[in-house]
Figure 1 (cartoon, rainbow, N blue to C red):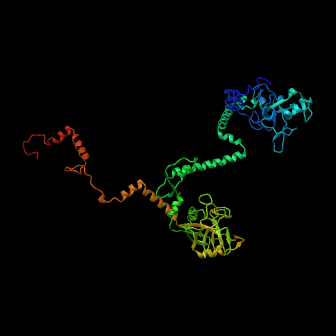
Figure 2: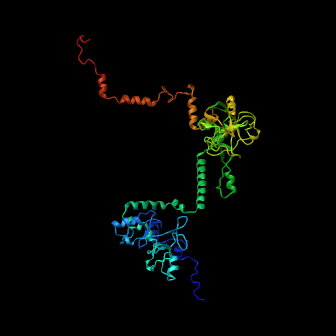
Figure 3: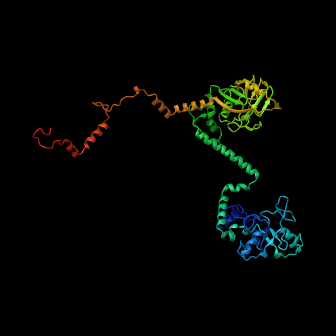
Length: 524
């Protein structure tokens, strides 16, 4: 055993270990080379910088499109990348072997070429191999013939097309024709600026990582929007809940939460505040090609459903739509702009929950009941609705009843008598337009805005000024002496004007009109 066997077992990292083995600080030269390097893909032409059609190469190993390099060499007798002399006879056409997916592979081992493969070609045949194949079949055995065509070649004839240890010939910025072309140089600089951004490297991550990043981005944007919304909303008399936000308890219970020592009331969303002010029913008039239907909406019992329906009616969402489903002696269904029964969207852009039970005690117990169509479950309401032809107790507890036909029963009778093919009406039943007679939600929103304005400082000042009477207009007293209601500033201004009068003007005023001495009455 040598006495120096443990001399390398150190309790610290050397400079070389830190730089080369543990990804530490590299020297400035390697940094600069890494930043300035713009690699050309193996499948691209070194002259046109686009994928080649007919692959070819020169003795130095630069890859070109055959027609592009031939046309270039007609006027220039030098290599466009290195600047060395080059003639047309030096260009070698290459034969790549492809797999079913179109990827280049080694024709002997069927090994696909990657950025880390050492790729070589035999110029006598133009066949492209992995360098390991040529070494094992030719160099080691001494059989210096092409493995596919048996064309003889020498070891010095082999052209290295790609060496992962030496990629200088794939450095676009080192090409002579790029250095001499300002437009290409500008394009490369723009691509380098893009590659310096973090988003550029996300394209090379796996599919699973991309999906994870997308989910995290959605959560981040959602949390960001929630934070911004919560910072905008301010608790007032109308949206303050009778319970707290619970941050004090959370801060004492969990170390993950920030410590809070003051309880604040939770803030109710705008819809909840608005629905509390809705006390009356809404009314709409539906005009169809069979006549009109007057509908009463139970806005207090099913506020969210009624707001969705009445808003769609106001913005013309249901105009020129058809009733796509008619079940004899049961119901007629519509509200789908596509007319297929698979479309429709709520005003919030997502399905909303049923409003069954609680304040809503309405059921499908008679003819003309208006109810929401859904896909099953508790949260699948969109825009489709249906009207019953008679009591349908089987639908109770499954669909939200939010209105009733109170006028136009003759129109409903005519619609019921339309023939069907299965559940599809044989005649078109179309909603031409819908007029909103009364919208309690709009009234509640206006009332809420009015109440909030009256509670503000600006509103209080406006109300005080509006309610001011003549008795409230008291004269201002400036002094206790005579003329106590006269503003001293006005008196001072008047006196200043008198003092400003020039002596010449005063003399003119005092000058007698008759300048001649009095002698007789002839001038009278």
